[in-house]
Image 1 (cartoon, one colour):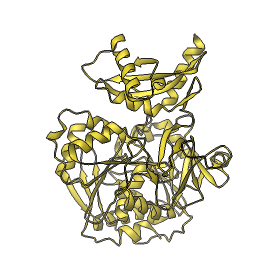
Image 2 (image 1 turned 90 degrees about the vertical axis):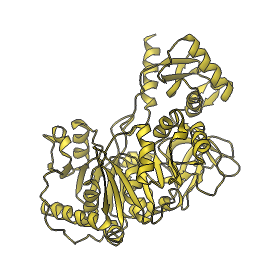
Image 3 (image 1 turned 120 degrees about the horizontal axis):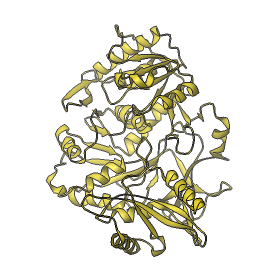
Image 4 (image 1 turned 180 degrees about the horizontal axis):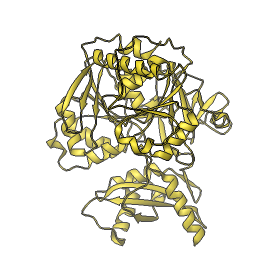
Length: 499
């Protein structure tokens, strides 16, 4: 199988493939036939540049009309693409090129200063020498590598996650069961092109189901996002939790019209129950939370037709045996916390961390791949996220997941964002500490601190309330928008050492 040929080129050439919104907010439609032809032109360029099956190509292209053709061209030629965020800097790119051995970089002109001097040839999208489409397509085996997706690197150098051509087929399952994408749908996944979720649902998933996708070159504005969903006719929406949170914070949500939108999903980190409630109360729309990683696919989710238990990650996805296990690789009893793990080697699971055999071996425990996240499982099989294994706070013998405290804080009208970590404490081991970003119109102070603490005691177990709150202008985040609690933990450890 080759996704470029067997999905894109076999689609109705006149059918809508992409609804593109450019930076000037103009909209144009691109058909499958046009995408396939452009991909053939890029495939010809790659071959003229000497790219062979198995060679690595770094793709530094943002949400523009050239991203899909470039990615498809890599698949057609059998090359291994390395999609990268356009926000990466020269040091980041140099690491990826050196580590992967990439021979060629395809980049937007805006990245010119960052790619200057890199140890690889560079082709810019605005002046690429594209000739007639090259119809030849590599016949890929299931185990042949297709992508190297680099992790965010929150604690050390990013790891290169290797996915195969079997993965390009396996992505169809989550598009069918979680996105519920189908012919005639217009799917908008807002992820940036350098991240795994864009491979899931900006490239592979919706097209596997015959749906069209939205590609928006502009940035995120919560009020504009509501307008575009309506104007474009989006039927399925996939956003980051942060985007849903900021949209839910807008005043008078009833002024927005979402009649075309029949389904919404969220992934990247757990979505707060109060945000799900806000969308359901105002629009009759339940946001279906999901859980997956760069290393795999959607492993756990809330699916249409099943009972939605607010705050739960949901149930394992079809084809995936997901358990909660202990240090010995045995499944724990209902209600007991453990490591979220995937049994076996389904095609949606990565094959290795590139050139890192020890790190690859470290994430397997017998027959289980261990995600590094923690959860409990109830009697009915629903999973409940408690935090990253290194995020869990141990305070006076209590194990406290930061997410629940953060969620409680976000229910308060003064709070825009929050991050919760364990602060070293001689008596309790750790204290629960919250870093809080306030909404406009609210001022930090002792009175607000006490009000937030009392609020948390009311909406979650009292022992979980943040004994310290620090008001900050912003939170450290990865380039994909996830909060870097590790930075805040390190900050508190450094402060404790100095004290």
